Picture 1: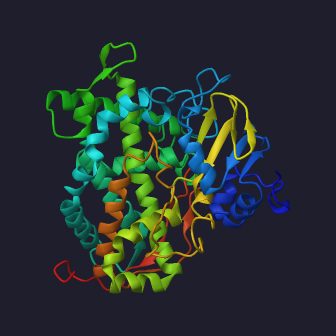
Picture 2: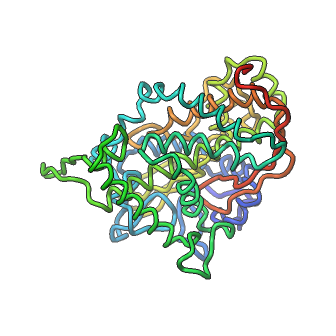
Length: 426
């Protein structure tokens, strides 16, 4: 199979391309002609398999550990979920482990993300959504990302992890620096001690996680960091051990970043989608019973995580392609979620779309997104509050997109808030 002429010569690892727009037309052509394609080597990346169809991404997820989250032959233990190999994380950070280690790690925090536990958060999330809107305090214009989209996910994950609410903006800054390490806005390469330096950012997060762990050991609370501080892990050989400082720090990093950044971007993309499809905003206001299907459609339409990489641990075949042990395989969720074989009129934003088998949370299996229920609840709660209290909110300028390969992010979105209804009237 060969890609279409338009895709020939296109570098799908070019972050500057994604800083301008998501290349859906290229995805469509590649998916139609070569749903699994060997992307040629670039200046910064070895060749890799690019998977763009819903069917093949789903099949890849069902292959389990044959396509490893961790590493593969010839990589000396490096690997992970991004196209560039990483050294710190594979085999230790939950998202970069395979079963049975992944299963052991996941059990340590999964109780906080079950549907039953998430439902208990609904009322507090509703109250906080009103507080967030009240904090606009008469402003008529602003940055939707900073003012509204970031706040509810930050508050929710801070609560669950056990971070004091007043520290949530540290989490916001650390997340921006970690995710935006290739974006000039979040870099300061001239000052190695700047908070915008990636190494300094990781150091600060590690120190904070260690201090928080010690506090939880002294004063246990009903939160995830207490669970991690007190956790006992049964290893493959049957020995029981506690998590070490590095494991806890990586857990903390994963929970904080994954727990706020993806939902923040889904919320922002959601408002932008309502702006581009205004009839859907009016439909939601008239029929709030569509909030549940709207949440899934926002997630499908935005797909905040563009791709995850796997590494083949043995020779295998996927969609007719002969993949060799050690090859990188990139599952491009942003393309799979616009597959016309699965989604009718896939580039149309439709809040009534059902069923909606999107792959933004993964294609099932051991690594299905732990925070899926929380993310959907946060979207339902916040957009429920927006449509009742800020019904005239409108986008008044182009979004500023994140320069990154992994994350389909929006850094800033200028809006006019319009009249603000009282919480009592909502």
